[in-house]
Image (cartoon, rainbow, N blue to C red; front, side, top):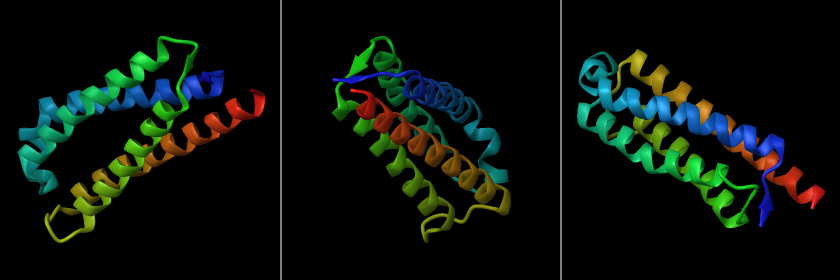
Length: 130
């Protein structure tokens, strides 16, 4: 088990809050922003829906004082996968986002990458104090 030190707890909490808000925004606003972003509304809707279990996982982890290291690794891996998928959406051959769509997708990918990095740092600190 990995103790959820203050740093790791804050990194996870920030991730849960931002991911939860983003999830709700994508679900509620998918039809509104699809055209300006140049992305299919269904992609935005299902991306928002996919975030919900992730937010629930983090919320569950935050209820305890410690969590299995594998669960923390899974959260980090999911964040990294999200970043890679986002960059594929922004710059890959399957979609043609507008400039504002590329900026939005890239900015949220950078935010998620930051959360992954903060969680890695928190995990290292937890191991160093154990």
